[in-house]
Length: 386
Image (cartoon, rainbow, N blue to C red):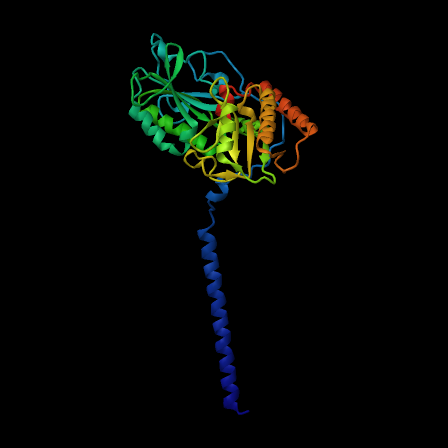
């Protein structure tokens, strides 16, 4: 190798080394700049606001209910769980930011009636709006629109003559005390914690716009109240069904089913379901076809079915064991009249031992509902299991 070649190789090595050293220096400089820029760290909003996963609640049969305290002109502090603070503000926001407005004690309808609306002390979270002058219905309507997704859970009550009256936003009278209640649990599920807070804030804004005082409890304790109520709901929400299925003689004619049903005291609903009502006009026993669209009145003359199911919605029926015995009797009568077989949900023949087991389960459910203060078939039970 000539001296020129050796010199070129050495020069090339020097160039490569210089480039490497320059890149390392640049990398070190940018690293120091980045560390300086991010020296003060900010909280990760997503991590900060993330809620821990809700673990399955331990199944319990303890009776955990709000504690009652006697105090007249409030949101009925007996409604709040133990340790819950009642806030009273004249506008949206924490209670300590504003002094409560004074309400003229001579205005009797500003006082909370002594008897709460049906079931509200067991099923609802509630907010009271209290004012010197009638609260504008337009403001209440605006609040309802802000929580329209919860419409089937919300009721408005007006205080008058020491009683609560359902508020009609389109008619007089107007009220100086309005109670908005939000049902914590129904067959749609448990109200989420964020919806509970949204409901409270909507009516706090309504109070501010109406120059009214707010009386409400903190929402956090009611999240646990709702969970506990839902555990009770899951244990009690039972439907008992017995089926009569067709045998070798073929499907049952709709006209024959209808004739038997009417003689037995059933009424046909527009949705194609037969129903027997109790003395209060509520459904006690229903009968449905195994085929769609059911016993639709305009088609019943031509339809047939391979079977029907008689059902008892357990928590919504008072005297449920007697109602179950009636259901069994009707199912047997129908099986004889149609030449069908009486079976359970697994299409197994029904025997007395199985029926006695069902009776025992029903008695236990009804005892637990009574102990909870939500007896089957009562107004409170009808609301909860709707």
